[in-house]
Picture (cartoon, rainbow, N blue to C red):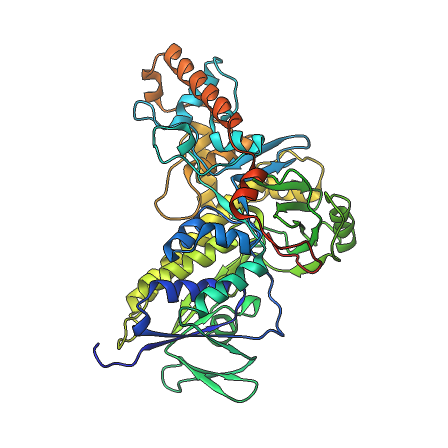
Length: 515
């Protein structure tokens, strides 16, 4: 609307969630139409989620026009091609969830059906892992940017990053403030609401000043000051399916080679993460207080580091779940204020990114009020992102053979969400793995964890029978051979980092973050 005042957006809280939200709003909305203010206090610590990410973060950075080499250099970033799971099925078992495809469609049939049919015919006993270029690249500790030729085997993968979460928030803070975001230092001590509508009209700072706004983005962390406390949006508890409620985090000195993947190792009371950065390794132990004490977790974590610990382990307490809605009134929760899922698949930053991008797409225009339809659509997408991510995480736990360990016995025998039970039964009975257009994880991601956790199909799509067995086997052999050959020729990951984005960051105490 011509002549209307700019729409005022106030972000409560900094850290990864606050500054990602600020960067998205400042970088993607018309600058003249929106006035963006972020309130944070250097006295209030942040959880520091997001040292490991998913490929969607590259899309986010590219949308904003962020220079990749500069960003990696400033955040001590490394490449992430997937996640290695060690001992999750049983002790001694391991597999990689790669950021790439398993083969492609042959004769109009998804690849896993041809793989399943070959196994059922006893003509091929190779794991799905043999048919992923990203898996082979992880084993080779190699990285090159994907080939732009869609016919090349080197185009069949994507990548994410490991980075220092504190350095990433600092980098985005500089990026966003340079593009007009106003940062206010201070603690919020009060929330002013309109007496008639109940909408938030301003936030009161400790010094007495009030910051007025039209829409408020709640990045206040677990406090959820606006959406949880002020708007009273209920919490949906998922601890029955995801019982881990504690994490100890500690950095340690790095070792060579710098691996291009995250590692998750199952332990008696939970699991341990390992995230290699240029200047250190991030480590942590996620565990359930019902099945593991804090001292046991601390001892287990410190006994399984690759290098000298750089600090005392830092304890985080949490509960798995989400708010019933992410947008209530004129308040939108992003990050921990909206929900929490343990960092098993590095989903924290994706959920921040998804909410921020959805908010941009549904943002009220200058001179207009909030459209109830936009709120409903945001909350619909919010629920899909969280619910489908929850199912994927629960899959890792429920399909295990770690018999005799209380935590693992519990999660193996618990009643599953109906949506997950359906997907498991569908794959076991027919090798089908539906691809949803919304939600986080692709069919190939599900396939890697299903097979890695020992869930195997008893039948394949009947259309797979149309391909003669000899032709199918020849294609499988050719694909596996091309993957091995090309992976062996890749540039070593460490060499890539040195030539592309060497960081000046040095290992230091006090840098632990959640995966």
